[in-house]
Amino acid sequence: MDNEIDFCRQMLLEIIDKLASIEQTTKSATKKTIYTLIAELEEASTINIDFFRTKQLVQIVRLYKEWIHEFDLNFKANIAIIMRPLLDSLQEDITVKSCETKLVFKNRQLSNVLIPLYVHEPFHKGMIPSQQISSLKIKFPYLFKVNTENLANLSAFELFELSQLGNHKSLGIDLSATDLNIHWQLVGLDFLKELDYPTDLQYPYVNIHKGYFSHIA
Image 1 (cartoon, rainbow, N blue to C red):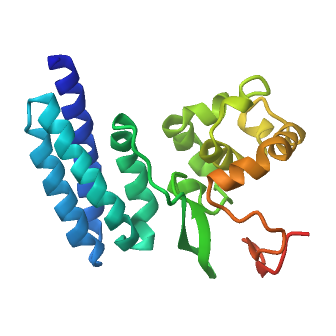
Image 2 (image 1 turned 30 degrees about the horizontal axis):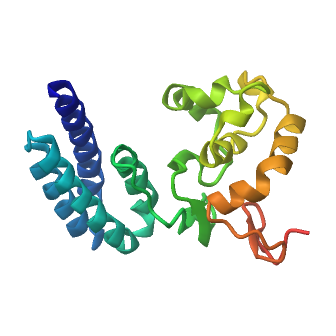
């Protein structure tokens, strides 16, 4: 029991620390909500009795599900990723799986772009600079261990991230573009639904080089 409490407390402290980093960098209305969420988690982390701690955490998750719609678009995905271990530990989930954001490039920006909620920020807009690859290998090692044998083990969110890496062979990933395309054809419709992405071929999509297109076909 003590080990379970220590593990839970460590998880909460890591979540609190990551949320605090976001809270310190924002001046939007999100700041107050994050501060309140941190305070609730800090209080829960001090509870040593499993039943009462779990009860408190379930209440916090209920509030988080209400607050997620209030979070600034620039931070919503990051907050969701931070909170996900807590939701998983309580076998909880949120209905929203994607959110709108603004992608900023050197000479332009694209607004109202739909991104998967649990996809990490470096993979939001593709076009990942080569100088970032070494740090991505450290932060996301599972992506660089993908091959044709374990490709099917990736979640929808992980497959989305993998697809943003470009030429996989040149990055040391034992996967061809053909293999990836075939896999997307097999799981694409189900995964798009899981990502909360539209599946209508006439739905507007975004080409990061040219802006909006009216349809895919």
